[in-house]
Length: 388
Image (cartoon, rainbow, N blue to C red):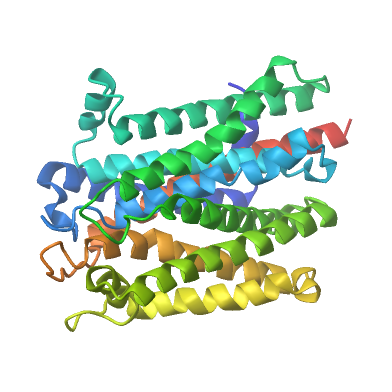
């Protein structure tokens, strides 16, 4: 197997971490088996609210996957050599994120065999069909790129010429996965919260904010735990990109708020009122959404201030704020608010159940396990080359 023997070599701390992740996965898998046998009735979903925590996580992780283009494009097309040490880490993050996104879709289906309906009976007029195409294609592209990149780095040879075409293809493909995902929502005429042409740009702006923020957190964690040095210039440029995209992300949200509340259309206002103030006595997400707003504002101010952005102690705090802010907004609020109120004006109560949360944590653990293994292999290869 391709260098996977390096993933089974590690100290006590490494195996304790792997064991903890596997324990979470086992518990979540048992809950999923229960869900598979009983049905989605054990979740907080209902007839009127058919998408919840699972689909919200799917949307969020598609964005994380798409964000790999932030390091791939400058490195391969604009020769930003400062990204040389972290570009493969970004691509491995994309592979893990796409896999996690797919697992959330399977969890939400209840009966995973239903996914074969899309494959056996393809319908080019269906956005779900195109979402499957772009996600599976993006996974294959990034898997191929990382496989070749790590192989040539280990052998110390130049990459084959054809891989450059694959890399160039993966750049617009990254944009497509989140664009098509946004179209799945904005193409539903009965849901005014999503019925906006700004949804796809909002998805991309938030993706290019949260994904690089996570990549910075991961590289700084590797620096602390393993001594891996990504280079201060790489972190500086990536944090600068995040500062710009965060400003754009906040601007897009303000544009949506202005359009909705200046027009004073009750149907459109109701969704935002539910999110931030509550509706008909129900305000399950209001506190979380205000936390998201506060974190977004504070992190944006920290990132656009060069002194704070270049401080190694403040930067990870700002990145964590960015990641958590976007996760609250996209990882829960965006999906739930689209169903509340219903087209008939009813307010539905939705609270994720313990089995639902357990399955979600297990899928998160799968992604973290994949990143752990991929990064362990990458760093082992580089340590091996450094020792030659």
